Amino acid sequence: MPPGGRSFLTRQYPCEQCPLRALPAFRDFEKQELGFVSRFKKGELGVEKGASVLVEGSHSAHLYTVLSGWAFRYKLLADGRRQILNYVMPGDLIGLQASVMGEMQHSVEALSPMLLCVFERDELPLLYRQQPKLAYDITWLAAREEQMLDENLLSVGRRTALERAAYLISFISMRAKNVGLNGTKPVEIPITQQHIADTLGLSLVHTNKTLKRLTERRMIAWRDGGCEVLDVEGLLDTSGWDGHKDVRRPFV
Amino acid sequence: MPPGGRSFLTRQYPCEQCPLRALPAFRDFEKQELGFVSRFKKGELGVEKGASVLVEGSHSAHLYTVLSGWAFRYKLLADGRRQILNYVMPGDLIGLQASVMGEMQHSVEALSPMLLCVFERDELPLLYRQQPKLAYDITWLAAREEQMLDENLLSVGRRTALERAAYLISFISMRAKNVGLNGTKPVEIPITQQHIADTLGLSLVHTNKTLKRLTERRMIAWRDGGCEVLDVEGLLDTSGWDGHKDVRRPFV
DNA sequence: CGCGGTTTTGAGAATCCTCAAAACCAGTGG
DNA sequence: CCACTGGTTTTGAGGATTCTCAAAACCGCG
Image 1 (cartoon, rainbow over the protein chains, first blue to last red):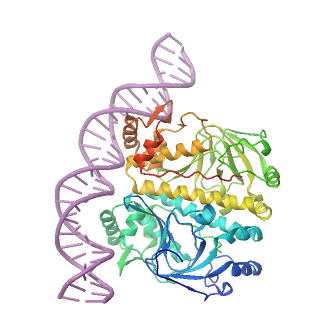
Image 2 (cartoon, rainbow over the protein chains, first blue to last red):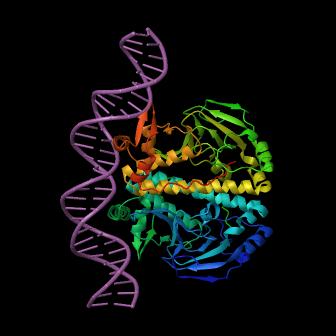
Image 3 (cartoon, rainbow over the protein chains, first blue to last red):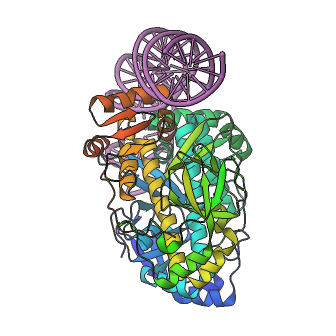
């Protein structure tokens, strides 16, 4: 049972009918791979909004793939300062660090209700032995996470507050659209300005004033506790970011 | 041939006599793994200080493990602002992103003369098929890089200038000591204050003033174009960082 | 209606930036 | 041997950004 309470177990989605597989963003599985993953998967874990999925310092016995919902990864300093490292969306793998290296060095918290596929950490070596292609996919995912972190670090280190905010929102928005969150409607991101502040490395007050400028330019709007993205092109433009090429990506 | 000029090829160190293997920081290989890596290795590449090892946007056909020397990974914004993402030391793998995902999203530049083991990107799938343990090691290395980036991002986003500087220098120093750079003498880091500034997300001037405070506290000293670390404990203390547990780590 | 969480606004203070110039230092060529 | 050069470090000063403190406004929910 994960820390942070409020969770439940189910077994609703057999891998053969995985809702993610239908999305064009993800690569197809071979039948044999599908069979392996199906055995590899131990069930589904539901977590409520605000619940901790993983906490820093723990030795989680599990590895998860997000089926639905949003979350974020973060670290804390001793006095409570928080840095959000990245956001987690459907198809993303969480807990790989602990699985591979032994201990979580960051925490993960749900931004919305989530459904997670549960895998056993101890069976990862088996996957590497029997499914080299899947093993390669896992490395692919790790490399992608690293790439996103590189970009985030560039942003926090070298972009201005306005550029940072525009970059972050367009980045999240594009990722969300890519995995079909919110369907075709304008993307709504379920976060508070405090989350944004803790991602950008800014104070809440200054973040608010920065977002106001984006709001005035009609690029975003704040609706019932979330950020609605109105003009991704405009955001990309003010951030000075190219955007991602969305290649077809693997997941497990 | 890598971009950035000034490089040469050799074949001096058979894997069986790899100088890294003697270090206590690295795990041992089984004979069979050693044989594979030995065939996997195509030769050695020497690069001079200041040379580009990899550049953003390229599709490098190679993957490297650092045998000796220092380097750094970085990204640039369109107007020239630079963010250094991490430093590269012996035993580190570089170019994995391009190998796995197709294109480099960052550049790598040598801080000192370096010697690199050269591998073929195209043979990586073969490694995954025949050597699951090595494949696992590569994932381990990717997860470790991610972990370092997380910590760097926390630093740049949430630590004060003084904490950041102290964290960075103690971090580099501990890594360097771990892989035996500079032997047992106090670690000397071959970087300029501009590098530090671009790592911390600060201006050169403010970085200089911040480093001066560390110098006055006798924690560091600047000697012939590099940073000498005098008091790691003091640095750790002022940074509010725990330091790394140094587990025995793999390399390829 | 009251409550807790979130957003918004104002204001003064601290941090950090840019501009500018000097000092320093190793290497080069005269 | 010395002057010159380019890169790096150091210092000063004014200005912009960002921070903290504080309070008000807003809003969904019980």
